[in-house]
Structure formats: structure tokens, C-alpha cells
Length: 281
Image (cartoon, rainbow, N blue to C red; front, top):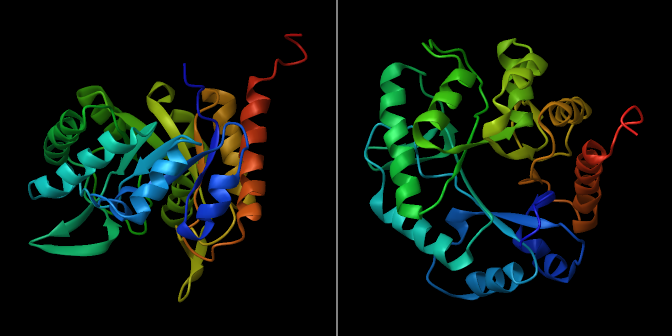
């Protein structure tokens, strides 16, 4: 029986050799699916070697589940082929859209949470799971502007999980960034999040907008996880228990050892949740 995942790292090619050589127990890696949707070649052979040593997770950024147009069947087919080849421990996608009218945008774009959107997105998630032959986790987005919504975000995510059987990927940094930008309580958000649906947790760094400064935070993934995000993460674990947790870094990539040190902080938090309290002892 495969051991449950603990703390992992988003994997970058620059760390490929170090990742293959690392023998830390419980370590797993996440890769962006779109970077690997090829039938063969050196990158796929590298992933084949890596999955022999460590569990892998696939994180999609371009399925455009919240889009208004039909899902890209060719894209979904390539994703399904990759899932069959790598047999990842987890597969996840974003609650966002990124394409329209044959144009594709390098961002995860927002949408109004309405009943119409719910009725559109739920079948798309269900179809994706059917094609992949497995349950996926849907990630809460980062928010940068106010929109008119009919649904509270947590209620919307919970309803998607209820209708489709999908899980949820709770990105704590996204919650913190959104709370700062829109003026809500990040801790209260996490306290309401449906624990039973959480399949995975993401942690990442953020930065201030170049023009607006700290008045607008950006989910940039180019810095270490900030202390307030660590505090929110530990609060979340105390309520829902340990879940597979990923450290993301997509810019200003540091040495592999620096990421391992950050990963160790998440691993320590996970292990502390598992320790019996003094009162229980």
C-alpha cells in the first residue's frame, strides 16, 4: 500500500538531477501538466525516472474549466494520455478560465459566481473526471478586483464538489492574497472551508504590485512563503488535520536546498498535527 503524501515541491527542470538524487522519505513533486503533454522525448523520460523514485502530482493551468466555450477535446485527450502514463498521485486544476475565441491568455481569469456558471462548470468537471478516469481537485483562485457574485466562493466550491464528486485544492496563499485585496478575513474563510473535500494544500509566496505597492498583492510564486501564510496554514491543519501540502515556486528559483528547507517547515507542521497532545497523553 502506498504511503500517504506529506509535503512536496513544485518541480523545475533546473532541479531535475537534484530531485532524482534526493532520498528524503515522503518527498513528492508536482509538475505542470502542460509542460509535459508530449508523446515522448527527454522530458517524459526524465519524469518516468522521477516517478520511479518519488510520487508525482499533475497540476493543470489551461483546461479553462470556467470558460464559456466547450472544453478543448484535444487538450483533454493529451492530459488523459499523460495521466495514464505517469499514474500521478494527484491531479488538479483551477477554477478559472484562460481562453476564448481561439485566443489563449497567460493568466487564470475570474468569472462571476452565478447559478448559470455553476450549471456550466459542474458538467465540465464531471466530463473531465470521466475522461481522466479519476477524481480531480479544483483550486480556489486569487482575486484582484471586486465582482458581482450570486454565490459565496466557499459555497460555490462546496456545491461543485457535491455535484461532481471532485475534491478541492486549498491554496492558502491565494486566500491570504484575496483577503488583503478584497478586504475579508482570511482566517474566517479557512475556518469555513469544507474539510472533507480538501485533497491537497498549496503554499506559495506573493509580492506587492509594482505600481500600487502593498495595496494590491500578487500571487507571484516568486518568493518564500510569508509568515502570515504559515500561520494560516497551521491554523488550518489544526482544524482539518494533515493533507498533502505543496510548496510552489515559479520565479526567482532558489537552490534546491533552500526549497527543501521550506518544505521541511511544512513537513514539521504536518507531523506536529499527528503528535498526541499532552492532555491526551
